[in-house]
Length: 338
Image (cartoon, rainbow, N blue to C red):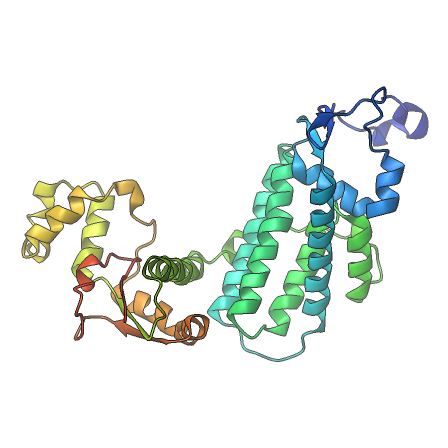
């Protein structure tokens, strides 16, 4: 525990020592007397040092018991390979596409990840930091690549930041990727990323969540009905429902709501919505009708490709055979699969 006193000058001594939890092997306590142990040297030879580091940091916080499971270690190795391939792909894209909302979405997620990773590291929550920096952000990049033709400048910014963000976790892999990106100095000597809050665009984040929520709702309908869609009709909530949500968020009572003539004319529906809606269910950001319509319109071709049929958006329904428009809520449209 005190070897650093002989190896390093005082100013380079560690500021703390972490005592790890028990080591388990396939769910059983490791014991040299029983012979069920994994030697670090053997693990590194078989899987590579970065995979071993990544697995140990990802399976438990430092003070918790870790459970060495060979199948999960191999999965971690495949995940690290996926990360490397995403970085190398990002460095190879070459085009001059103008920045779009989906690009701002990915860059917003990037700065969110930097912020959340840094906060976790500062409180010694290594596993939590890795979830934000690695596993969650891989999902964000994969969604972006699925969602659009990638923009070279966006991916290069992501690659530069993501390599530096992951360097403490997988140093050898990140040094190789950093050199592949054309950098001369070591990534370990480069500045660690800093989150810029102004770069986190809450509006574009909410827009993309709208699209994801619509996809989830359509999938659930298709699972229940077992049908193949020919057309999908999407009914957006009218403006009075958006007003209602904003009023409910501000703490208005039913009596206060009925004083508003725009809501009073829909009194029966207002009462039903109030009865079946908890305030904590109302989104923090409620788009206007036009904002919501624009969000779905920009994703229309993507949605049609995913589901293999046409999507028809309605601000106000001129075709609603199943009365699905009545079920629409702000940020949660009514859906009829035909």
